[in-house]
Image 1 (cartoon, rainbow, N blue to C red):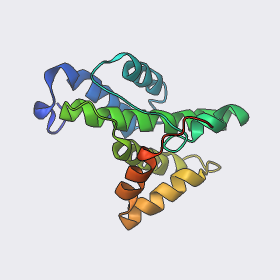
Image 2: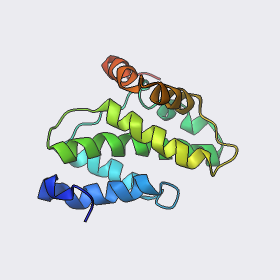
Image 3: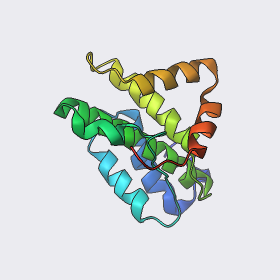
Image 4: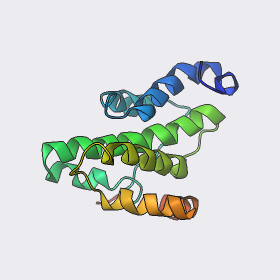
Length: 150
């Protein structure tokens, strides 16, 4: 059982465990992001707003190499997983850009150390903001921008 899992609503525990497995080892569990994203789309108890501000990889992933596409999808998956996980744990249906961005930072740290050529400017900026303690404010700002266009 995951630490603190007894406080997670029982109906959400299996999905939270799946999300945690993905976030703990994103490269080994890269295929899980699709299942998590599909679950986010069909569940009525979560809402994840994907905009170019919080998931810029949606706009660029088709214009790059297959390796870069896979890694961009991994970052989108991390955003969805973190955002969704927060809602499942708290039981509150509310878009959580901060939780999504924190997961992107953590996954990027794990991936960038193993994939030598992978650099992403957005994730790098978010890592700096995280280290400066300004990621929450940045997430609040980006989460309020409603611009669905790439």
